[in-house]
Image 1 (cartoon, rainbow, N blue to C red):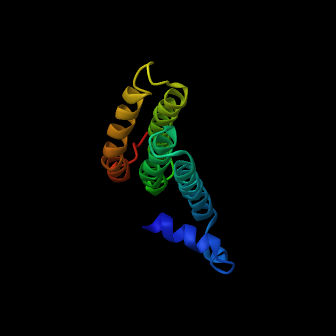
Image 2 (image 1 turned 90 degrees about the vertical axis):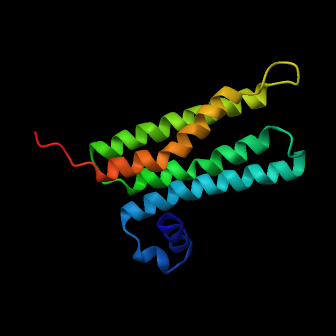
Length: 140
């Protein structure tokens, strides 16, 4: 809920003055994912919900979950690991999009394996983020 609240503050003329630099970056990432998901839904409305634009809307919409988890982890090695996790999920999601946009009716499933792994990673993302949040930094 906090990233969406920061996004709403970012869109307000006076609210953006109350945000720290980190909160501005957070709202930019979440806002970009929401914008791409809504844009993909608009394309679904124009071109039909049976095409690859529905996959795009789901990828960008579900990507908000690991993004929000990543931005809640304290800066440092744990956040870096969480960014890598989110990057891998984004790569899987984009791989499913490339496959879906390149697929024809007779040439396979349109990135179903990539999308399945992406969904599994998104479902696990809150647990991974909570682990990274609770993890104590190593003393070296």
